[in-house]
Image 1: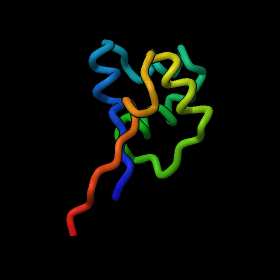
Image 2 (image 1 turned 90 degrees about the vertical axis):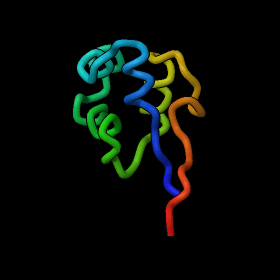
Image 3 (image 1 turned 45 degrees about the vertical axis):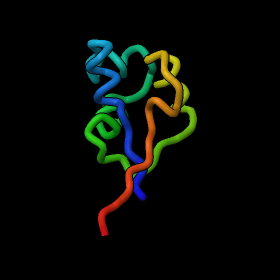
Length: 70
């Protein structure tokens, strides 16, 4: 199983770009970019909280588990 995120989809639906999210949340552009491109290897709880508050979503909207092919 792999944890994935819907950040790109949620941002597109709300017409937000990486810089918009970075500026509004105080998160670095690099942090948002790594999540957006799904290359991040870890995510802190405070980052999740800031994203969910700004994007008006729940953690379950942002994160999901994907089954890996064997």
